[in-house]
Length: 367
Ligand code: SF4
Image (cartoon, rainbow, N blue to C red; front, side, top):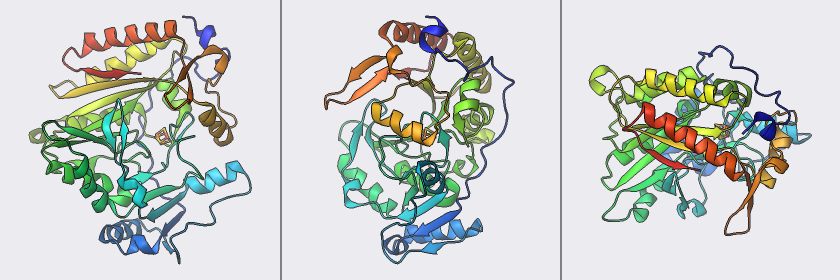
């Protein structure tokens, strides 16, 4: 595979710069609104306390409908929405869980929308309307509801990161900690979350009982720098991962952990880039821990491309259909993925490099 095959215009990825070290900036939305229904919920009241403790002003809506988010154009709407937190009750449809293979059995969303600005964002095209962050005040009800989906005789897994970055909003919601405590009591169920943020101190000391797997999304340094606005640096994510994985006796969280290598892109010098990333990971996790990996290559749909180009009109992300293979799902939807030969090359590389460094840590899937 040559880089020109896949990236005809390669301005996005110059040679790897020096690794950055910064933490993610705490997200402090410009506008915070609560619906009347959300305020009726005890958990909504807890969120209200958290938000006001951050010094944020709160607008109490008269109805449960969120208004005045649209701006003058798509960019303006995006800007407004991304700096708005709406605390709402999840609708009854949220109680009908959807399967989420291959990452987990079911998705259970504690929020929808994310404060970060990734130019390949997975939410583009899957959530409708302006990308406001909506946090669910009826979380305890959503958690209780998961019991109906637990299957006897096997551990059922629930993923809470499908539609948000759970750590990116945790300081304002406390929702992830609530989920971790809840699943800590469920013998037949496990929780999984993934994040690009690094504020994990509030998760240390929670009674997770090994039933939450804490994962961090990682990518090559240059890709993170160019494409993942508002998130923590790779180094900060690695340190957060270390903190959560370290045994409790050593001051850590004692969590099972994981890395989600995503979206994998054959950028210039990709072998060296990703080897360097895996070397850094190995150096960070220099103690025995329960580690897994998930590998997700970059893909897009016609719908996600359209939305992403509205949100990030100047993006240098490769969204060229001509160089991709088409994958259709059973509902007739189309995805653009890498060509089969490129996919094989990438997969062989990652499996080999991973197994050399982490022989006891399974790769759960490649997609
Ligand atoms: S962290 Fe995930 S959900 Fe948030 S902007 Fe990035 S890709 Fe989208």
